[in-house]
Image (cartoon, rainbow, N blue to C red; front, side, top):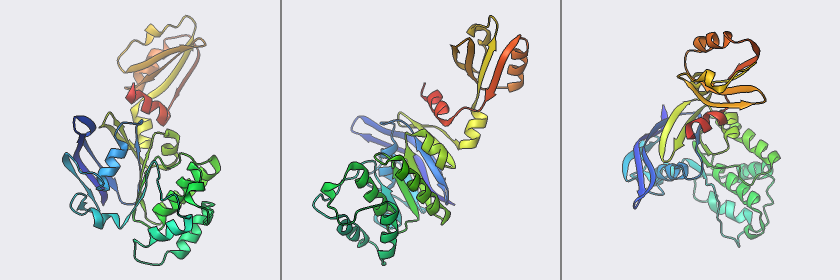
Length: 290
């Protein structure tokens, strides 16, 4: 079952591009990675799905409901951590979280205690006294407080130290195990590779790839390094070869195509060394952007 359905979603701010003709689905129970550099359209997509802004064209559905028509109803079951968090500076952390909990039905006292202890929050400090990282931890607790069915995370780890990042990832995995669907937007590719099942790559407001991370690495292209006496980059001037570089006497490149044909070509050389490996998500990402 698709928790998120996006069909030809487009948003312009006047003449400025937000996103153009974006389509994808997110299935129930998965952790979906949404990657792209700043300005690619990640936050615009999330804000459209939260009905904080309205599309120019196309539609988005969450829980099978149109986000424009049913925004308030949808948001009752959603948790959201924006890339930047802004609060009433004079409030104490405990008062802010109690205020947030009041928007939902139920008693969240134990949940608040568990999350705040996990995130090492000082509940009686004023928001104005908190560092950016501690404000981000408040946002994490606030977003998870009401046990949402769907969680939107927009650059969630900025400001968190490495130890707290690890705790955060463990928390998200724990939430996912209990059935929470996670939409994880980031430009930090190692995080996405570590956490997500599938990934969508957005470039200049348009989707360029949607795939399982494992398939993206296996089926996209191979990373090849060849060392041989007298070898020049021109030897690999053949279809499917990209990003050819020379380093310390080796020729390094990416190859997409019949690997048997490449192995046969390489076997004609008097080799000193050869490696064929899967690229990292970061290398795949840079390939799409270059």
